[in-house]
Image (cartoon, rainbow, N blue to C red):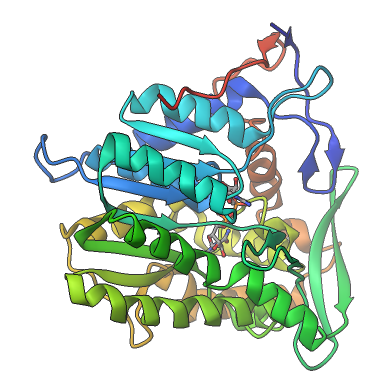
Amino acid sequence: MNARVVSPAGKGFVFLDAHPAGCAATVDRMWRDVPAGPVPAGSRPTALVVGCSAGYGLAATIAGLARYGIRGVGVCLEKPPTPRRTATAGWYRVAATAELAGDDFVFVNGDAFSDQTKEQVTKLLAERFGPVDHLIYSVAAPRRTDPDTGETYASVLKPLGAVHTTKTLVFDDGIPVVKTVTSEPATEEETAQTVAVMGGADWRRWLRHLSAADLLADGVTTAALTYIGSPLTSGIYRAGTIGAAKADLEATARELHAQLAARGGRAVTSVNGAAVTQSSTAIPGIALYVGLLRAVLGGAMVSPTAQLVQLWDQLVGAAELTTDDAARVRLDTWELEPTVQAAIGERWRDATSETIAGLADVDWFAGEVRRLYGFDVPGVDYSLPVETEIPWPATS
Ligand SMILES: NC(=O)c1ccc[n+]([C@@H]2O[C@H](COP(=O)([O-])OP(=O)(O)OC[C@H]3O[C@@H](n4cnc5c(N)ncnc54)[C@H](O)[C@@H]3O)[C@@H](O)[C@H]2O)c1
């Protein structure tokens, strides 16, 4: 037992501790935001969500559970509490999600890229749940060890071909500051490594494992998350190393689709809108862009949970699975609306440290970052001690 007051401390957008009660309250709120599903009780789909503890993968897990009563497995990589530090936020979110989910959805904490984790999940599915009807792949990771070669690849966020300079938003003692950051172009090796981490290789490997174990249901649908984004961020994102990885992921969807179509299945990518997550805040320029996006759209920004409700509706067949000509489900149209982009573009041009508070929703952005760690969540009394030694939910 280790109950104590947990406060936000850290550097930039990264905090050292997470608040268990705040993380649980976040999960509760996300769950309550999911409208009940149209599928009658009794037909609960079996699902695997890879990257289930944060951002879009958490939204996928909660939307699937709350709307369609999915059963199955979630996989993520989180750290347990230590005597000095709390567990990671995702650890507490998983514990809270498991409480709401009940016994028919279990969580595996392990490296999704390893064959060991794949075997553990395969065993769980074979013993308890049977073939998967749906697989959502939503991993964002800085490195991946290739099980075939033992080589560890590292991803980088760099432009391709030329130096790229972008405006970005940082907080200096809580005060928003607009800076410029310049990134050198990636080498071919760095680009190849980023593709090896964030491209389609591991998604393909999951499907191969499940197929070999006869754990893909006829008509299986699978979606991996991708991003396109604005011309304002394309230098570092879509036209950069991570964009090369996303192009590989999208090509992998088309390849997997050709294989799954034989059994009535479908593989797609899902293009989602910009959201504040631990991964996205690490990308130069994204903090500024998302702060401006929020100022332009306000509450009309579509939350990850609401987007994932739409994706589930399409995956289970409650709505038609509709893709663009690159086999991508487009859940980002609200973000790329030309009038929205034009308004963000104007504000981006005018953004300086002096003007930023009037142009971007900096308070919302800073709050979102804190909420990633369970702080600033309404209804939580942060002055109270809270138990930090929360166990990982049982898998048996
Ligand atoms: N955040 C955005 O704005 C945005 C927009 C569109 C698409 N996406 C895509 O959504 C996907 C998820 O990104 P996110 O922003 O939600 O990230 P995130 O950082 O919020 O979550 C990443 C998830 O991956 C898991 N993970 C990381 N390394 C792992 C490993 N080795 N083994 C098992 N699990 C691991 C983490 O535990 C966590 O559950 C990515 O493909 C990203 O490109 C994000």
